[in-house]
Structure formats: C-alpha cells, structure tokens
Image (cartoon, rainbow, N blue to C red):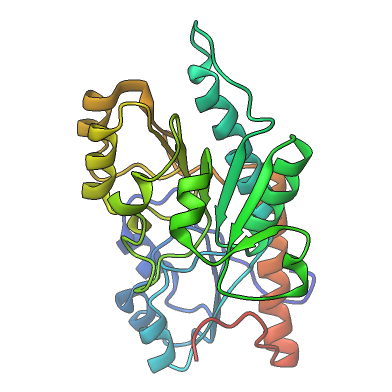
Length: 280
C-alpha cells in the first residue's frame, strides 16, 4: 500500500473457484499454501509476478507460470527459525515419551544427522549444538559454512550413526521417496526420524516396514502421511504428526515472510528485480 499498490485480501475462502475469481484483475499475487494451478493462472490475464510467502513452492505450477511469462518467486529463510525450533521440540517430545508417564531420555550427548543444510538445516545445527548434541551433516556441497560441522558424504553412515535424523530438503524428482527402509532401518536402537519438510520425501512403504521390524524406532512429522491412520493403529505413540503443518505457524514467521513477499512484489514492479525467481 505504501508503494502505491492496491491491495486486495482473500482469506478463508471455501473453494478454489473463489481464488480463480479473485485473480481476474491482479498483476501481483502473494500466496501461502494456496494452489496456483494452471487454471488459476489462465484466469489472471494481467498477472506478472507471484510470490510464495515461504521457502517451498510446490504449490505453484512453475511450467504454467513460465508459459505465460509470469515470474514466480519464494522467500527463502524467512520462516526457517520457526521450523528449526519445531525440529528441536519434536526431538524432545519424542524423547520424553510425548510427556506421558515413564522414563524418557535427554537429547544432550546424542548424535543428530541433518539431511539438507540450507537455512533450516543450519539453524537446526546451531540450536542442537547449544543443546549439547553432536551434529553430523550430509551434503553434496563443500562450502565454507560447513567447516564448523562434521560433514559426511554417505547417507548410510549418517543414518547408522545418528540417534536422530532431521530431514530438511525440498520435494523434487530426485528427493521424492528418497528416505525409505534401507536408510531408516540402519538407525541405532531408539532412533527417531524427524520430517518437517514434505511427506513425499518419505517412502511410506519402507517406513512402515522399518517400524514393523524395529519396535524401537520412532517417526515424528509435520506432515501427516497418507497412511497415518494405519500407522497410528499399528505403532501407537512411536508415530506422531502435528494436526496440520505447523513448522512456520508462528506470528514472527508469518510477518517475516509476508513482509519479504510484499517487498519482492514492489521491487519487481519498480526495479524489475527477479531475485529469488524459481522459474526460468
């Protein structure tokens, strides 16, 4: 508004048709979990830029955006701290038997493996070290920022070494179903897999098989698996999922990502700035 844009809000709409109707005259679009499909894009003839207020952007049809000459962006890092805090909280929650009577364990002194070392992974590492954990990072990159961590280039060694593994990677053709039986079943006794990324990364068949064969293993996730009801019935408190995706559900994260998205819209219209563009 301060930059002279007319702002139209659409919240808590009932169905996708409401979003389709709302984009008829817009030139810029900011979304969170809203699905910007080819149908939505076709209904927005003036649309020039769409920004996903968050790091993940699998709710944007990038091919349709590119075809129409629309710049698609995300706001990486703006919600990272909220997600990283949830990872730590989940480790404690699962270690303390979901706060039910009984003897739990401390996370201090335990090994944490991190898959994906972007903004979230780095913050998880810092917080975990502050909690007294030993951190092991799996990465395909060699960068200066990794030198303070124990870096490993073998997923097998990471899973077989770590009491906890935190998955912090996007869902891509390369990563979908990349975490399955062969990796999970190698975890030490009492091992716990934490997934705050995307459910598609987990091979559910392999996860279920590992949990069946290893009564000591646990799984906590911020994204309900497709077969969650079956898993809950079979494995009880060894499996936990949040009621909805809550990694970025903090006031601070929403403000940070919202302001970043607004600035990106303004900078695109005023300066043609395409930083953080995710389609080409």
